[in-house]
Image 1 (tube, helix red, strand yellow):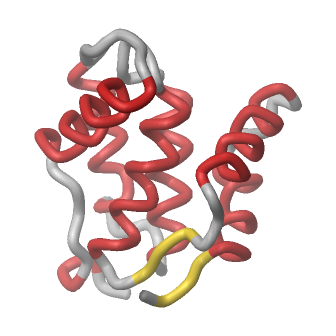
Image 2: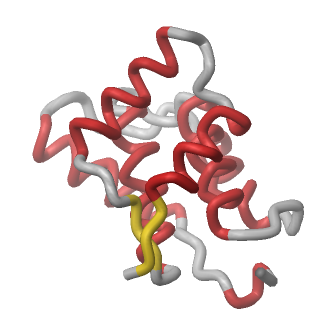
Length: 128
């Protein structure tokens, strides 16, 4: 899919998602590293990825590994990925608890990387 047809999240949108999650679930607001957040948001736009699932997996991995926020990085990665997909007519068909369990389990196993996340996203991807 050409990246020109894809809708990407802005820095302000990603920060708003994080702030909403902190308001809802608690934690400390704030961007730890704006440059790393911008890098994470730009990664799916590089033209390297062939489809939305790959772009979402790249975004997800970068949000997790860059630890861009002061708190709530796992939640922010999951929901930012889902919002990105929804902007483009798709969603992750998984409840938030199952998504969180996948993330935490993956991190505990040291496998929350692109190659591990991509098949999981493909498995749960559903057209809106």
